[in-house]
Length: 446
Picture 1 (tube, helix red, strand yellow):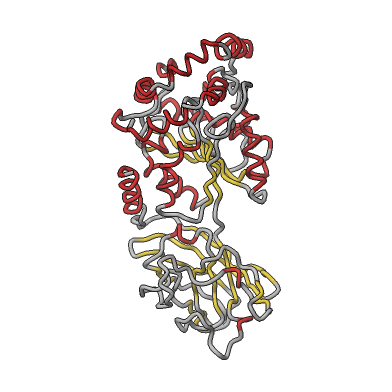
Picture 2: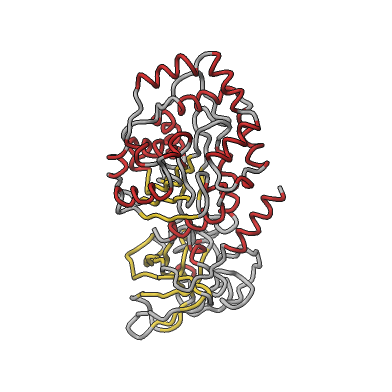
């Protein structure tokens, strides 16, 4: 618990904006009325700086003079019916964003709503291009929240001036949509959705709008499975069902290590549910394009894993001493990072012997086939994250290392974005803060 608290404190401290030359994000602003959302009137760009968030409007079609401008808590610009039964433009945007629960409207430089922004000044031609600064905001705060331009100048109150009716108070609105991430954990002895616990805690320290879905894969954790072989399509099916249960809203898939083929299976079966793919510590290209002999997989399954040898092997592999040695030799760059939290989790999850079938399906190589063409043909945005000390696992360590992976992926997937951070093969756990920071930065600008 102490380690988790220290990690959260570090995340909060280091995820604050510090870069002056951060790339800008852009939000489309539309006209709104009591009937719905109208046409675009321009865009608003935002960039993190040392002085805070610089917001640059490029808007037209407004009345001359000052206009109130706020970041609202809602993630929609649609009209809603108020208590009197009247349809109100943009009421779905809710009130000013106030995460500190001050309940006071004190302007951009006060200690009230963080969503209070400086007024926009519109020229006689109806245009506004003058930038404003929000010293208490960062670009990621815009994600999943509505930017609203109001009818008249800001009175620093949540009630419109008497001369204006509610139906004309909110005139323009735009939302930088929040994202949905489907986190796909690796498969192995004791591995489950709990692999992502540290990553999710650190993420939530700076972003509470992005939806993070972290289910147990079939046969792992609490998602038990009988004595049957599992292939990527089998693991993908419940993930697709999960996305459909969430209003068919598409998600960005985040794979860890050799769970990448599961993400590719999801993408092949339900491409409409995928808006991007993030591969953390992807396997070497050679592993991805070399099929594993089917006969050999079946022999391993029937003669080794299904019998008493497999049972005894799993009992041996779930021992703390084995888990610690394997993790130090194959997963972590620094042996000190193989901590009690990691080992306790693996031991607890591996206590359920039925989880061995997912592990054995993975070890038998049922996921191994030539994925190269599908990987290269992806139309959605792709981001790759490598560990500086990445290696293969087991015998592949002799020919697979970080530089080989990075070089090969750059050649094979020139359109993919990539980054490299400290760590080896379990970056979301070993290098949590750097992993979260890099992923959030890519997500914000894609």
